[in-house]
Length: 137
Image (tube, rainbow, N blue to C red):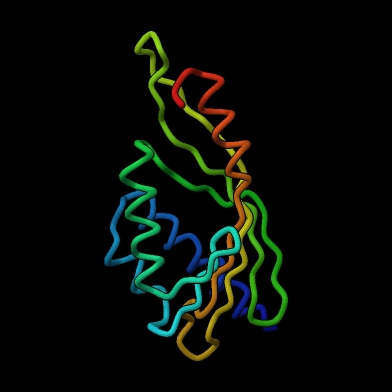
């Protein structure tokens, strides 16, 4: 992989993260190829499935944001560790922020720099425990 592609992948991820934080679905989806294969926690979906997945994330988690904390590139794939954050309200009405890791790989079309495959994993039971621990389950 060229340094140019590596830099372009990093820039794309930054732009995608900005769109995710802004909850700008149209901009976010523009970074994905129409023939996208999206796999979240073992479930395979298409681009419409990604759209539904993101809408569900945003509707269920206020203050949802992602931040890249590590990455590695190999050919047309970038493997990423993300820190995900979401706001929650505790039992006394106090606001708390929950953080957890998410792992993802993004495969890019080198000619368009659109994502053609995204695979993500989150330890959902551990995240549920974090919310339960602050009384926000």
